[in-house]
Amino acid sequence: MNRATLDLWVGFFVAIGLAALLFLALKVGNLASSNVGETYTLQAEFDNIGGLKVRAPVKSAGVVVGRVADIRFDPETYRAVVSMKMDARYKFPRDTILTINTSGILGEQYIGFEVGGDTAMLKDGDMVKKTQSAVVLEKLISQFMFNKAQEDKK
Amino acid sequence: MRDDFFSGGLRGLGRRVTDRVWRLGFAARFLLATIRYSTVAFGRFGLTIREIYFTGVLSLIIILVSGLFVGMVLGLQGYDTLQRYGSSEALGILVALSLVRELGPVVAALLFASRAGSAITAEIGLMKATEQLSAMEMMAVDPIARVVAPRFWAGVISMPLLAALFSALGIFGGYLVGVQLIGVDEGSFWSQMQASVDFREDIVNGVIKSAVFGVIISWIAVFEGYDCEPTAEGVSGATTRTVVTSSLAILAADFILTALMFRGA
Image (tube, chains in turn cyan, orange):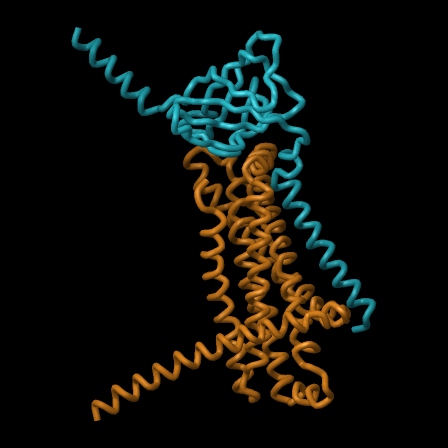
């Protein structure tokens, strides 16, 4: 086989190999959607984060507006500190309440933003204090059972 | 009599162990020499391109077809299990993650070892058996630079591309079976996939895996060929050893890499 055909085949091989990588990165992976460009960081303290994971979505009105970047435990307050990378296009009022919700009954957990009415906006690096912990299903069930038993006694 | 039996067995065991250790040391030295002479492989890039054609391009058919079928089987099996829990929309995640993280690099590497690794060993071994390597040395051409390094680098370059093609075709196969044949919703198939496949965590790690496998396969293949006994029997034995050793090495390395990469969440 002469040199030119060889080069042509190898060029073709490398090109479709790179195209496959591009397909994996853009269509299968989240390279296109995760790099929304500018972000700012918010922090929040929770009593209990339940099963929240790093990279879980942050949603407001159901729309993804950011991602959980880091979760750590504060040994002084004994609470969980969650930092979130927020899309810089969206700003939220200072009195926004953060809740940990579950999509579906056993689905992934995410942070929901319940927007308040303050005119001052949250800035990069701010710590949100008004939070609501994750609903722990076992606690809920045991509470329900306990109440039920008390009612039956009466 | 009994003393003989035991000491003979012990001696045999000891010889086999030292033999293995000696071969491992030689292989490591050989890898270093290959890397040192790789300037030739890149300096005269035509040599490497020729080898990429033989190892990469000629492996395309087997990689593409098996990728498609593996993806289609994943689609069927995944759907069968997921629909029991009422979450057949998660089929996209299942197909994409299992291909990009594990099956793509590993199965493509196993196929590559048996398709291209064995061919490299047989070629170099036959060159040695017909004294072409000695003839090169006689002409002051280093066979490691002229023969071994281009084949090594061709394998290292081809492997990640082949693994990416395997994964891409597999995902397409899963899409064909899941969406077109069974009727999983197309939108949720792709969007759930995109939501849970991370570029850095999953795709880049898969590429790193396949590059490591490429180094392992090419190293074993060129070494077995260079080290084989220069007889017909020796060449066939070396070819078998290439496939067996590189398959085992791939699976062991896959465990180690997975443990390093995907620990925890």
